[in-house]
Image (cartoon, rainbow, N blue to C red; front, side, top):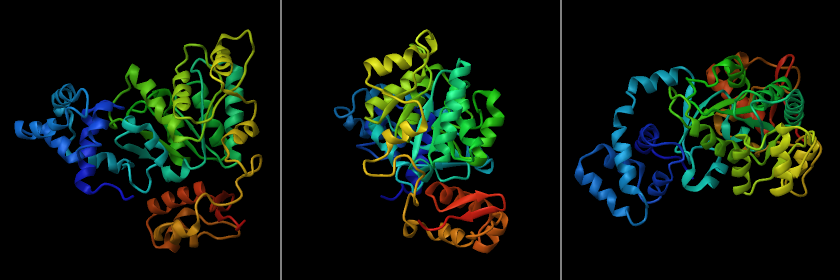
Length: 384
C-alpha cells in the first residue's frame, strides 16, 4: 500500500488541527470520503457541506461533527508555520507511508490521522520489536528501580521501549533504555514543540537523539486532561505487548492496559508488596484481568515473542530482509564497515547523502538489526 498523495496529505494535516484525537466520527467518515472531500465540506460553502451529508446514515453524529470542525477553522496553520516546524526537525508520517507503523491500523476509526515525529530512527522499523513499559507518575523507589532495570534489559536484547514520557515509571523506562544504548519511543500527550512535562526537556532531547518523540497533536498544542488517556491507545497499539510496572487502582496507566487488552495484545503486570497501594492496580490486573505476572525481561520476551522463536536470547538477525531496504538505506549500509567503526559524517560522504539522511537511515538500520554503535562509531553486524 502506498501513502496518500500530496493533496490528501495536506487535507489530513489540516483535519488534524480541526478534530480531536481519536474522533471516531471523523474516522468513520474517512472510510466513505477522501480527506480532501471532508476538508472541502468543513471549510467550503453549503454545496460542499450538503454533498458530504449523504454519508449521514453511515456515520452517526456527522452533522454535529461538521459543525464542531467548522468552528475551529481559525486553528488552521499558515504554510510558514508548517515550514518552521519542519526546519525544527519535525516530520509527518501518514497511514500508508513507508514509516507508518501498520499496527496502529488495529485502532480502527480511532486510528491517528497522522503522527508528528522527531528523531533520526525510522518509526516503523523501531516498533517492529517493541514493548510498552508504563506505570504510575507517583512511583515508589521500588517501582522506579524495577522499571529502569526492566527497560534496560529489554533494550539490551534488541527491544524498543515505548512509553508516555511522563514522570515516574515512564521516565525511568526511557532512561533505562537509553542507558543500555537501546531505542526508545515517547508518545507525548502534547505537541512536540510544547513538550509536556517541561521538566523532562533534557530527557526528550536524549530520546530524540537515540530514538523518537511521537505525537498526533499539532506541534504547538498543549495537553488536556482527557488527552492523556486518549494518547494511551497509541502507546498500547505501537508495541507487541504492555507491561504495567506499578499502578494504583485509579492510575492512568490502567487505561493503557485496557487498550492493550481491547487490542488483544499481551498484557503483563509486575507484582509489588501486598501492603502497597501503588501496586494495587497491578494486583487487580493479575487477579481480575488475567494479566500475566512478570518479574524480568525474560518473562516479558517469552510472552511477546511468536511461538517457535528464540525467547530468551537477543534477536538473531535483521527485523526485515536486506532486499526490502530502499536504495538510500542500502547505500548507507554499504558505507558502514564490518570492523572498527565509522562516524555518521564519514558514512554520509561514502554513501553520497547528507548528514540528516545518513543519521535517519542509521537509526532505521539499527532498529532493523543491520548495524550497531561501537566505541569507534557505527559498525555493521555480521550475518547470522
